[in-house]
Length: 71
Image (cartoon, rainbow, N blue to C red; front, side, top):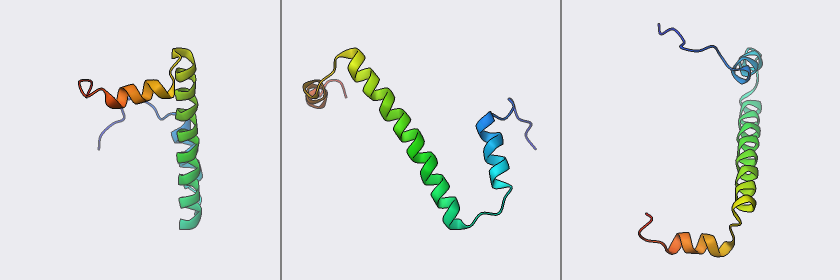
């Protein structure tokens, strides 16, 4: 058995406590979706901040898409 190199995070502990309860497959799917949406929203918010900070526009994105050398 492998020993953990670092302790569990607060999120892992919370999820372990949640999953010690019997939940239906339907609830499990709903929980997974909620977690996925939370992290997707958080990533989107960070990208919005980057766009604002860097002054990026739709034209910036078009230029990136057309830049064949950058791939």
